[in-house]
Image 1 (cartoon, rainbow, N blue to C red):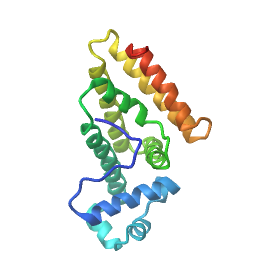
Image 2: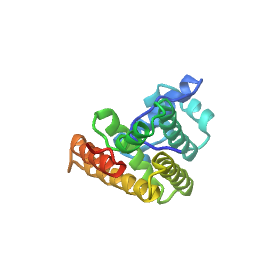
Image 3: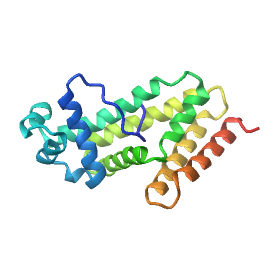
Image 4: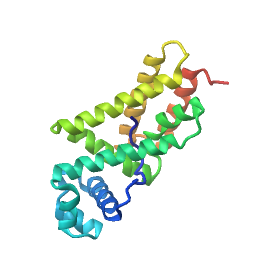
Length: 192
């Protein structure tokens, strides 16, 4: 349903599987998805290559499982938020913009997955489904405001664009988040 912005805790009872997923994210953050190999993941996770193969079978399965884990973890974090619509909407919009090394890490991994979706239809499907779910949740949170759907799309597009500008060093995370917070306040009528 919901997307990215932070490396999240993995809900997995198998510690080695969790370490493998985290290793994938580290490798992606430092060298892109093409740098993910069973050998490099095993080294990063401190497990054997056989353990990685046991859990995931193929490199594509490994990369996709790490993508799913990121999405699931972000969703779990979202579900723990207070039910107040403005708090939830603010989280959805602002979490996309990295303002700490931790969130920059997560956002960079997310954007690597976006790039990979060009030639991996399964990752493309996962990300499209996630983005659609995020937009649908924003619309739900904005109802009964008139024009909830265009407002949700506008906020998410702005967040995505500002996240890119932060990643390339054109804006600071604080500048981008301030822009988003101001726009969110205007669009939701929360301006004093």
